[in-house]
Length: 153
Length: 244
Image (cartoon, rainbow over all chains, first blue to last red; front, side):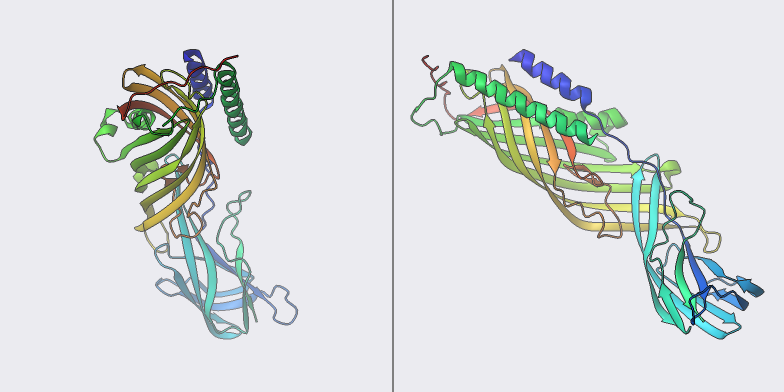
């Protein structure tokens, strides 16, 4: 009896282990907006006279031509961003809501915050479509910011 | 890792069944009157959960709140069956790199289920058992983390889940061996599965479920080593051995 007890105990102790999760952080904090032609859906580089974000005093872009997309840093403490566009098509406002999901992966790896649930709540553009509702970065290419919203003019 | 878990489960079940067959071959079933009246209650304290905190944090784990956990169990015998109830508390804090994030988890859990004892004719009332459990944990957690942004500045965010509940099932097997008079020791190995982890439906995804373990795992192994004390209700009369 005791031999059985000890042998099974040893067997379990031998294989009993806990594995730490992989340390892959995919939480991006950038919102990418691309510009497209409303008629055929092709990319439509445009001239931006002025680009501002509510809550940030500085002007992000001014008198710049051939802009295919813009990338905005979202406020980690908020769940909304409002962007003011002054382009060759006029003045437009875009307000986007987002959610976040946070988790501690491990003590060694730290915290990952993923911003997702992107939703356009106000737009003055002809047409706007949420292309990718998450700001998660690409596992294979973490520096690339995926396109989240497509604006059609 | 998953294959290893299933392999261990299978081997332990086979081992349990084999032991049962050996016992049944040398003893006979008895229609003893009152055999379903309990002989006592066994109360156990898990030494592994206490020891894990000490391994991680040293002896301070026994008194400080950054990691504290313990489990107790109680079982009552009804002939070759045990009614089991387990209860535990858990409290722990995890610190991320450079203390840029702090995660706190606190809660309790209970497990209830039945075991079948394959050594029910053992004169010392040793047990080689196999059983099932329903488990439920009630807990809260909180994450505080620092963020940095070139545009928005640096800051600290705090998220919390004030009341979470998770449930899961377990397959258990183990041994209980009499050491001295009213003192037993034993272990329980358990396979935990079918967990409701609250992982994807909250702003803060829980890292840990008290009594279960890491919330991201769909199934987990658990192990307890018990120091057990028996409070007898009546004198135990072993069943007579089978006549061949």
